[in-house]
Image (cartoon, rainbow, N blue to C red; front, side, top):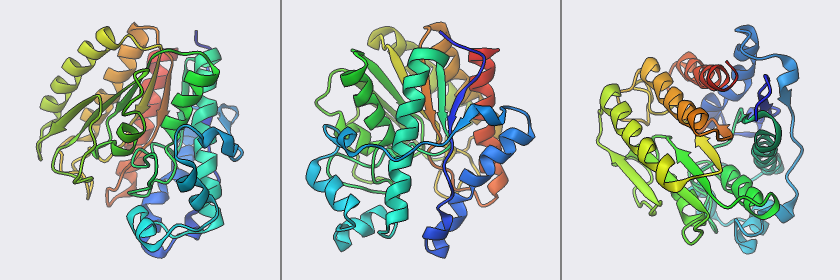
Length: 306
């Protein structure tokens, strides 16, 4: 199923298109590929730069009225406020590139490599007819729907381990039996109005790394047997770190690394291809975010190609 090389979507920077207050968390998208190359985790040829997603691929995932307003820069003030980003063409194009990057990485993981990454992505707050929390188009939902409709898959598991519940993903697949959505998140964290995933595991504030890992292991052990997926999407947000300003959990970088290792080991044991999107990360020290994301790449590559 696998070759010896991952497939990684990389995107041109769009930091300059944002207000100054939004720029710092987005720097990781520029720094992460540089750090992966510096540590010799990957090579330049492992990266690809996606084009914009064809708009037809949004159908069936997002309602036409919503995504057309987004594309045409005609969202109203309440919608823009809910998203948290301004409207401009650069952000629209980057969102389409992110979705295409995840879709392509998933397709290549399915057909060739067994593993595909997106340096960005994990836009799990975007629902059928809304954007939210810096998410406008749901990249993994778009890719999952593509695998169902165009690649003939019958069962997909989405493992969302961002500290914030994947409410948009839950909304999109609410009535889709072919996709099982798991969200392990801070119960008291954003979004404060949750939408029901197929399985939600809400965690208390200040949960330790050991308790988190025990809960996750039990959950994955049960799901991989009962769901019997053919493909896994992994949303690997680093906002579970104790250094994260929006997290409320107490995982250190080692516990976060072990979290990723658990997911990849299950994928390996069950011979399942996996696509990984990076998700959130808001630590004050950018190095904490980049280091944790680098560990995700190291664990995936080491487990599935080692």
